[in-house]
Length: 385
Image (cartoon, rainbow, N blue to C red; front, side, top):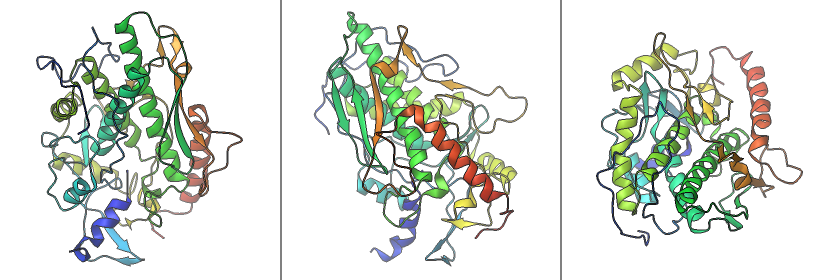
């Protein structure tokens, strides 16, 4: 979650398409498959966009909790509260690669894309910004993988402490066009989740979207990576159903699919979401703290795997475990491409790797973060510093 945008909101009172193939759109296809089943495979090759730009727009979302108070330069901000809760049937219109003006319109309540937190009985808390980000990254990566199938390619991204690169390796593509399409879908979702997992690691070790605005309160928040994984699953279904022929088609399909996904997870009303936050106050979060206190968030999930249980399903309800495919036709997806983190120029407290970090290194970095947090929390009790 990009906490600095909440800080930007406090300052607002002082601040008075991509060329795509518009081919046959499969409007009759359902927007979303059954999430209780493993990720499916496309029955055919559908029209898809030409390679898309990286979706590097910022979606505002804040720390775990609701009616969050804040401080600026160490001083409480009077009368300020961030509700941070969204109605599951009113998630608005999805925008791929939201622009800066979209971000500002969201902060003042005018954007048609509604982001925040929703509690679901089968999936725990869902962060809509994380869901949308990973869905967009899946489509972006798919558009490049499909157009360069089997070719060695490097996609360079903005730094997050280290230099992020998506390395697509050289290999012999499957003979069948449908199998090539299926491989591109699975690999895109796999890499999109790796990007999400790295973002959690980077936030803990000091990454700041805007220098001086700490994001530590958001690192390893318990709903984050489950929400990212849900976003990749939604994107897989839309690509498999032929709902991404153009960006307008994709955006409309996402707008339909998000409420459907939340319904499958048995989403509750905003009052229900606030009730579950109240039940976790002083356990998972501390309503007495103010943003950007890092330990406003008291419980974190340091698991970075692609096989995830939700953060907090109630007793007696069947929790939905989400997974991503790890192999294609018996071959590990890491054989076809991976995320690499090379040493950067401003790595904050991140240890410099011998050569680079890859996904297999993320669990050790997360466990190091966990040990440090538990040691700090042992003497913290409920008071914020």
